[in-house]
Image (cartoon, rainbow, N blue to C red; front, side, top):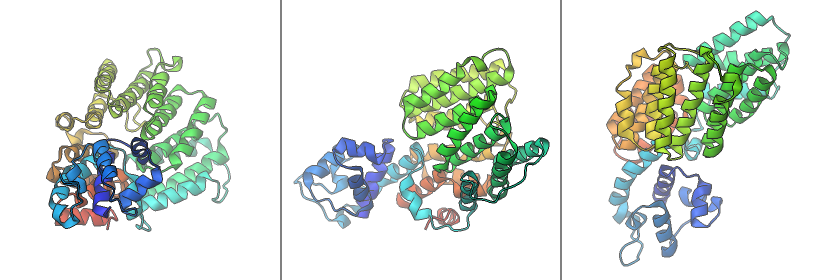
Length: 420
């Protein structure tokens, strides 16, 4: 099997929302076999296996080189047909699924990038391999946390690479396990590592939830649970992810008339809705989204909990609709939702970058390459450090590069993202 065929198999797999393990289970083989097939390391000339692969992935057998007379065509004769299929599959796969780890190694040679520096320093601080520090007064520590949150909202990864590790170290030196600053610090780390698709997110999420339980603050506990639900969803554990989010939203500590607690419930309900979309529960997604919209309307349209991922508001619910609709497989509905939001009305740089990235993913799923690229360029202009670092963007750019004609704008964006 050639690398081109391997790319087709990988793209079709990701378009289904499957991991390599999922495909291996369908094919009754090992995950390592699927990996070798996708990289082209394992040639595949067995017609029966090729046919089973085509059937499982729901793609034409001819795309895998199988003719009506069950002969394998030379690659050169089938390139046009296969490339046409890749045009939709590769971009759709990158748009419709969590960031594909299969492309990470190809882009990991970007030494010295803000993301690499940030993750390395945060890891060092979390594993206590950095230098120790003396305790500092609570007020400056709280101000440092607020500054780190602003840097996150502004997508300033270079600034976070300095501020966040120091915050972790100082918070451990200063805070007890019942202090909300330490729990909020790890909540911020979790949120960032989710965005960067880094496994440190699991460590940070576990610490955040333990610390949130110890301090007993309902809003901190709600955010810790929401981030854990996101990680569970990304792992493909949809039932558990929805249970975590809905369970926390219905917890007694978030009930009552307090507007901040109502807003946290809304954020958790939106998380559950997005999980329902990934689980192909379209009606459940829309029902939960309407529930979140009702909570936002009940709060009078105000933006609450700005430090919780830019907050909860009717605009936040509308922004959520974009990602939820494309995750549910309806890019037209996603774009329709996007057209109701003026990007400049979004409260932070991070939200604007997310808006354009979500729009790009929807256009990618729709097969509209030009609009996808333009949305990515808008995201880059809004937040260059985040756009160049996010695996979601790298997946889209890689899909565009491998699925059709390239342009100077696309090649320039790929180079700036460290994709060769």
